[in-house]
Length: 625
Image 1 (spheres, rainbow, N blue to C red):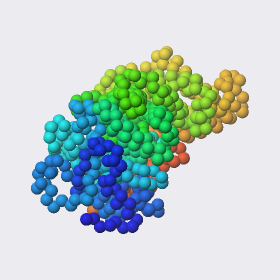
Image 2 (image 1 turned 90 degrees about the vertical axis):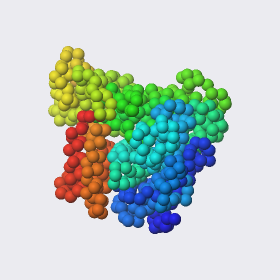
Image 3 (image 1 turned 135 degrees about the vertical axis):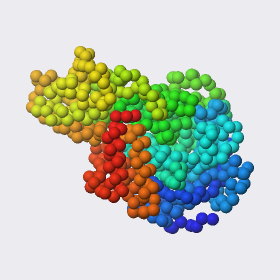
Image 4 (image 1 turned 90 degrees about the horizontal axis):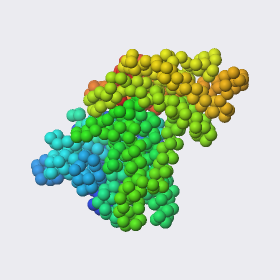
């Protein structure tokens, strides 16, 4: 039996395997006894998140101590006792057991031959429990805790597998340290930038490349948890699962729903439609790849990002990139909207089944009202994100959204011409898939063009010449043929700048005046606006924005450094500080952005060495997927 933790950390004891999903879905999970896993050390801990969850006091410093590390390990450094272990009891000799069982939940999963969720679900995860904090109920689950019978590999082998088994795909039950640390870093950056996502609380390192990663969100239910019952035609179970999901959203204060079943269902579907419309728009506009598909596995039911194993942030519109899995290629950036919308349609099918008891065909819901909500929210959020990338302030964005939607649409068309151009070389193979690289890095243009106007005596009346215009955003790998200035391209350069100027003037609430009639007062307002846009755009479109490839190499640098810090608490704190500083430097919000301090970069200590390597990697991979 574990000793009681020190008073400041007593809430960790609440994460003991109990969870209300058990009462909702009696066959929606498999219970596993667990044992403590020795040899772990906390590599990363999310102190701000821990404070939000009430796991540490509000005034707790961002420093690990022996008592805190001990309770983190006692809570999360666990491994399930699976079916293989029970059949080989010698494997359990000397095991220190936890008192409660922990559940691995069942849900749909694309990798399984059975497409109804009978054999699929959490293949390497268990649910630790829930935490109430600030009026919100959070779910907490852990990855890398052992091989369950629900893994694709166990289904392929048609038998229980030992934790660590590698002969079958997705079967080992373990989590690679680099994957968990990458997930922790990227999810926290996304969260702080206002992108709906799960978050990582901690990553435990075992020194052999394996780890446990702990994720949390106000609602970790996936569409796949619900669609499982839909696929199997199980009305009562679907009804209870849907009500559980809606209740959690309502009790957490995110949605307001009426009491009557029909109204509750309709309002809930509208909220789902808007949530998924926003998510699809954010991913498309911010160049975030997420493998969405019909099973609803890689996303949360509330429209948040889940599971960073295949998440990538691109430098440009790499809409030809496809991730290659064991036996299939993923969807692409431009197809995410289709799959997000199809999931909303499946939610409509589910809700109708709950209300009527009759399971109709999915195509019967092609005109569902929640799809109109999806489409509207997608358009609105996409335009907001475009104007944000442009560098407009929130008041300017709201004004343009209200009065200048045609101007926004015109600018988007002008932007899309350059955004969609691909290199003449054609598609190419990558280590994890395929892509066709874009010619232009649009964020460079959005950063440099307002600087040009702000620094020119003629202001908005100036014209950037086509050669400079294309050069400042051309990718370094673009060839001579890719950058050829045809008459058509020159015309597109002029149109882009005309559309750009029109939006600037519309943001000031005045008509698009010809240059011949512009007056000094108007020019003054233009100068103020373009200067503000230039300052904001420089942060939002920072040159050294994290990419998927960049993250891979940065994690490699951290992994190389962490072994040197393993026996030195001071160096270990420096490692955490360096990761935190890097995360801060990638939250590209004007007024909140914290560039890495120069003193830290010059430091000869571990923190400085790591930050210099991170900066070099960001430079090297600033144009990649």
